[in-house]
Image 1 (cartoon, rainbow, N blue to C red):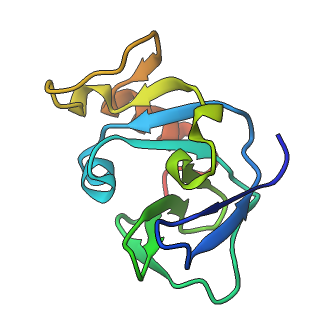
Image 2: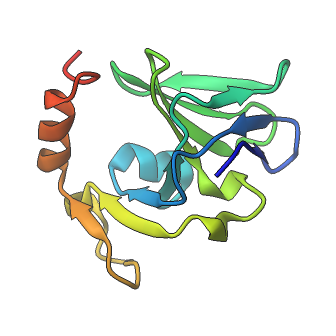
Length: 142
């Protein structure tokens, strides 16, 4: 998949991104749920994500290693970005055709509220499993 463009609800914030593949993942952690108003469904665009010059973007530092980017005008949740700039997980809802990104995995499955669930089979990871994997990766542990 080549470069894609995306935008917020009002269209003031646009970006160009190249998804690493067509898969999407869902994060059920409490921060992602509050940030997105539900499940945060993203695709990995690490290494190939740029907001348009002058885009009204606000970045909120939500942890020691990550920040969340949203449109300053309409409030659309757009991306989770690592503070070192190496990782970018972009909301599939910001792309013109989010159906191009089938959901294949769910993170923080043990934090998912019992009031909803996805249909179909996905690979799941608990908070502890995710943190153990992240801490052992070259990018993690900082």
